[in-house]
Amino acid sequence: MDGTKVPGGMHYTWVSDSLFPQSIVVDLGQIQEVDIITLAPDQRVKPAPEEPLSEGNVTSCKVYASKDNEEFILVAEKSWEANALYRTIAFDRQAARYLKIEILDANGSSAVITEIEVGLSD
Image (cartoon, rainbow, N blue to C red):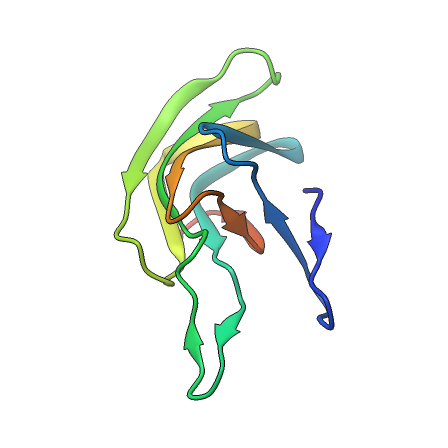
């Protein structure tokens, strides 16, 4: 995932442009069994007392799975309140190499993601 280094920070952040939907395709390197994705929101905070920012957090998305990066099937659709919590998307177990996260909306003019975790919930 291409991202922008946070000034003064040690991590990178992906920021979409203002046109939705936006898509991120995750290549797992080989076909694997997966059934959960977690999106980490913007890690910046407001000044003391520190309070997480909700600006840029994903509020609606779809997830698709594919074995070949050509034919994708819809495996999940999820919506959240505009807050600073992690976004967890659970779905039926899939054998996939590629997962496409289609961001339909975010809190503000762009979506901000600092980390994507993919795995099995077992």
